[in-house]
Length: 291
Image (cartoon, rainbow, N blue to C red; front, side, top):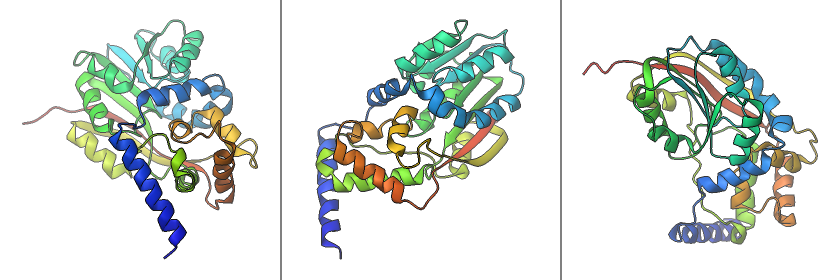
């Protein structure tokens, strides 16, 4: 047994237990602040990587019935603009937890409506069968809210409407997750929040959630996107501009602690695994409850 590794693990477990008991979990407000910090650089550093998959989903999205369209996690507005161009007769609502992202989006698409809220809180306040379409491009998953979010999408969506989404899977960005875990073991006393990321493992998990909530899948594709930092030898500075590290940079002081940042970055550089987004892109529509 590696005694040093065992001791590090024990220290981290004690630290995390203390954070849980003190109710110092990673919260949505933490994520919002992290995305705020990346709002001005998100388009130039990250949006282009996601565009092809997002464009494909929007092109396949079928005609929508009357009713509002909700773009959950609208970010800086790319999907809102595309929806407004394709569905000019609909009211487009962009929802995002980050005020910084919403501000950027509102400047680009003044004809749309923007709401500063998290997905679940927003959906919970909408009338049943009020939406002609719901789009969530890269904004679902990562928290225990996913089952409730899907249930609320089904409640809010009209029978002829469509729910279109792209969601990262649990093994997405594996080198980043591994580096983060190693960094927590190395610096347990610098961990400031407890977190339990809960991205779905595979399509089977998502399909069961959709079936349970009376959705039928009309299109689905699983894919991967290779992620290549602009400066491969200094990936952390770039990652902090993209929003990818939202949550991570609250749990560990990746922006402010030189030792932590250098250790994290070195673990990324040492990884032999390609940095990738592993995702599911799908469109589902409501079905009637036959019971």
